Image (cartoon, rainbow, N blue to C red; front, side):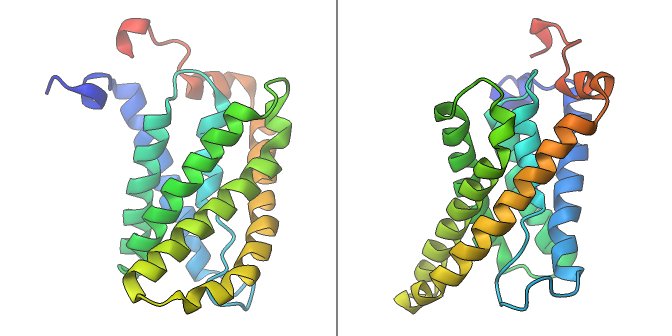
Length: 193
């Protein structure tokens, strides 16, 4: 195995990736087990995106590819946990679109105190997630009528995306700096990357 991502793995990165995948999958699955936070079909809080934003904004040795792998594997595990296998298509498409939007927002928003804008990043990621899911629904069902549901989903996406971004901001501010530095993997040598 001398290629790309596998070659750059070390035990600490692998263990942290596994931990983040499990946390994100459990958070995503927990949404389906919670009593209806919102009685509208298809509206979720997007708790799994907290892990994605955390990785994108913690800094250190984390890369966009790590976040992508965590998003995709999280979607598969959450579908297995809940028994909703059909959701994999929607969740992966939405998760990849959300990650892309978050990466874009991280790049174009001001870099000084950029973590303060995490509620905005969360809302942008939620809107992209919805867009990915809606396109997937049109492809799978071959019906454009699903777009009539979009205004409700977009409104909920802005609210719950900002909530997830705010939760991520709290994590980054409240976790001890020593723990954050361990997660950032600042102790790894460049050769370990």
